[in-house]
Length: 139
Image 1 (tube, rainbow, N blue to C red):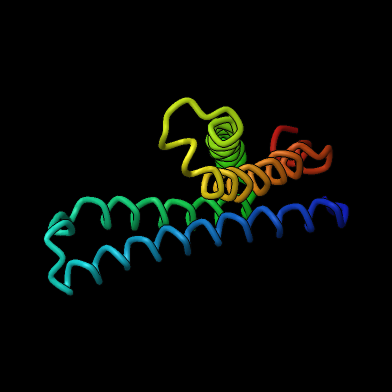
Image 2 (cartoon, one colour; image 1 turned 60 degrees about the vertical axis):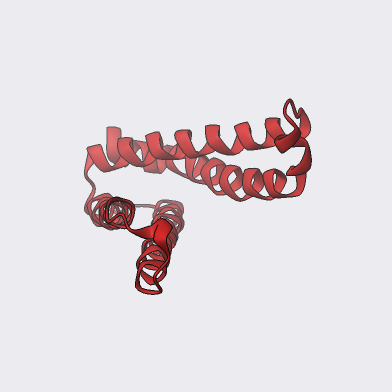
């Protein structure tokens, strides 16, 4: 069945966002390994880089399976987008309604983090729920 161009554009953008998330997770995992090699005593644990690498590999597998048309990949991408959107909105709420002195002093960071997390997650949610995309995976 031939898909409309909006389906392929949506799938490409969602795949790009997931690939960027995988690259970011690998970057953080690599930074932990580099700090460990530099002798930083706080980075003696292997768990954090291993978990981040596992999550990055999961993102890559999800992108591949999303392109192949798997329903579970659509649902998992939508769920992760919703969770990242919730975290981004939480950061924005903490920025605009500070309760603790930490939240009050970290307004610029919370504002940037909330925007960086919330906007791509909202875009992914909208793209995944476009009628041609939803029909392909749920139809």
